Length: 327
Image 1 (tube, rainbow, N blue to C red):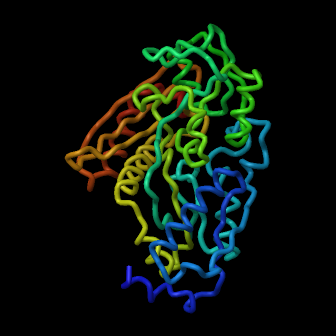
Image 2 (cartoon, rainbow, N blue to C red):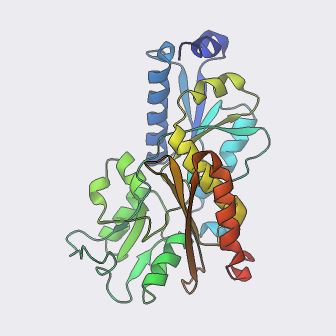
Image 3 (spheres, helix red, strand yellow):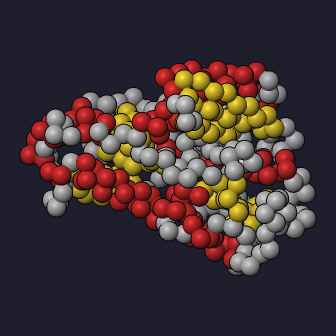
C-alpha cells in the first residue's frame, strides 16, 4: 500500500474525488462500503473530506412501468453514469456488476471488483407463510401471481412450476418487499446480496441454492469503473481488488459475452472458486416461458477463467434453439 500511496496522494489530484452512483438505498449503501474500504486501504485519505457523491438517475431508474427489454435493453442502469464519467463530471463510479455491459464504452475501464456478497436469489413470501424445507416452491399456491421483472427468474420458476403466473414488479428493494406484504403478489424474488447490504436479510423467506435458481452473472459483486486514461486511480483501485471476485467475474462475463443474448433472453451464470483453486462455472439458457431450459457446468484453472466462460457459453448456445437468441 505504501508503494501506491504517493501516486494517488490527494495533493496530486483535483479534489474532491467525485464518485458516481445511482440513488437507490442499495446503490448508496454499496458506495458507502466502497469508500470506507478505500479509506482503510489508503490511510492518507482517512479523515479528509476528499469524496463527493454524485447521484445519477439512469434510464432504468426513471422508467418503472415497463420491462427493461422494452426501454433499451443492456446498460439501462449504467448509460448515464458512463456519460458522466466520460465527460469528467465524476472520477469513478460504483455499480452492481450484473448491471454492466460485457463490453464497456470506449475510454471506460472496469478498474476493480470487490469481494462477492451472497450470490443467491431468495424467495420472498408474506410473513408467517408455512415453509416446506424440502421443497422451496411448495409454499406457492397453485396459480399464484409472482411479481418480477427478471426473465431469468421467471423462466426458471416457470420451468419448475408451470402453473405460476407473473406480473411486472420493479422498483427498489423496499418497494418490492412492501408489494408482497400488501398482498398485491403472492411472492417475489430478490438477491440475497442486496438484502444483506441493507440489513434486511431477515426478510428472506427461502434462500435458493445456485443449483435450484442459477443467479444472474456477477450477482453480488460490486464493480468500479474509471476513465481508461486515469492511471493514478487505476493503481489505487487495483490495491482493493478481490482476486476471487475478479476471477469468477471474468468467467461469468465471458459466458455472457459468448451467449450474446438480449435482456429478453433468460441467462444465468455462477462461478465459484473451489478449495483446490479451480473454478467451477454453471451456465443456464432458457426460454422465457420455461418450456426450454439448459443448464451445464464445467471446471478449470483459475487462470483460464475467460476461456472457461467462453467455451461454456458457446456450448450452451450451440445446443439451444436459435430463436431464443433471435429476439
